[in-house]
Amino acid sequence: MRLALLIIAGCLWAIPVCGQVPTGYVSALVASFPNRDNAAELRARAFVEEKVEVSHRLRLTLSGFAEALVADRGDEGTTTTVFRVQDANIELRARRLDLLAGFARVAWGTLDELQPTDVVNPLDVSRFFFEGRNEARMPVPLVRARIFIEGDTSVEAIYVPFYRRGRFDQLDEKTSPFSVTPDPGTGLVVCLAIGCPTLPPTVVTFEPDRQARNAQGGVRLTATTGRVDWSVAAFRGFEPFGLYTLMGVLPASPSVVRINQVFPRFTMIGGDFETVFGEWGIRGEGAVHTDDSFQSTDLRIVQGHSLEGGIGVDRKAGSYTLSGTVLVHHEAYDAPLRTPDGIRKDRNDVSLVVSGDRTFARERYRLRTFGVYTPNEHSAFVRGIGTASVRDNLVLEGSAGWFLGTGNDTVGRFSDSDFGYVRLKYFF
Image 1 (cartoon, rainbow, N blue to C red):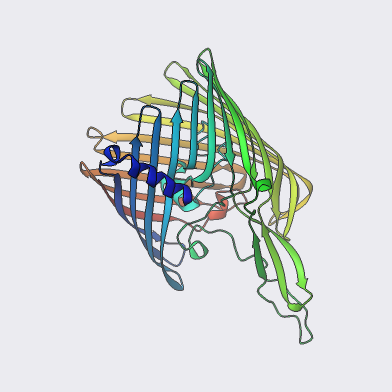
Image 2 (cartoon, rainbow, N blue to C red):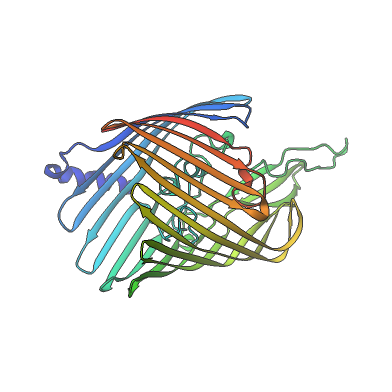
């Protein structure tokens, strides 16, 4: 917030440049969740963005949004409002140096939606399923230095001083249809003198403190060889979503069970490439988490490693754009991991990802589709988004998302979160 105020002050100092009217939009979204006791909600959002070119070397970006929720989520109704800074940063550009500081979003990787190396920014899961990964990235405070060595070769270094966790939903996360984290410890039994009642546990969250030792960061080398654009990257950070560990009965209160929610460290090493072969675009991306953490259903955190990679193709033909990706996931555990299916020592998944984009009537109408299917888990997610330009600055949008089957993979955990929504968005 201090940085945001400094940027605003810098914009005020450059009053002749900042006199332009900011851009943005206001929108109203009505959504229904048929598998959640017909839960329904209204989300109203106002987004404002200002980009100021102070000079050809200095640019200021400031954006933020206010969003309100009125919802009937099963047994209870809820209302909430949030105000968030989306981007608040200063970018300094020189001949061979690009320096960015502030709240920002950085996209790594080339694959469609499911990008193994895209680990700098946490995600808002609800916005990921509603709108896609680009809109789901949440900004973090960072400093990025990018040095251009020669031609298309550059080295990018990122330093994230403070941790920010991911969200299933930034609007009343606990009751959100996209929150798949159950109350940990449900069904635990504590023996007392009067019997063995089932008690709700006490969950204590330990997010990484704002200390120098808890900083995150990474480097990325990007280059072009022949007709192939490629990069390699490494990042050391914290898990965006918490894991749980059972601490046992508190000695001072034998009727209370304590569970800790923690955010372990991880190390990612990965790379990607992209090239063109005739009318086809070919992309590949992979990442290895050399030290990873996994949740066991008996409330243990098991260490291990994981690998995720894929290759995809896309083609644009007239008003059509089609793409397909095969994504492979492997994880191995240093100790046996208990899952709903039993005890495992490792896990392997292959997912098929497809997407399409079609415009009609000189781009007045657009249809976007996205789907992911994991055969061994028999789980899938399919989303369709249709938009119609009512006027130049007024867009009507409708979307539906289906979660098919259940499983232990990422998509299978949202099996009862089917949704449909209609949104009206006015741009200014």
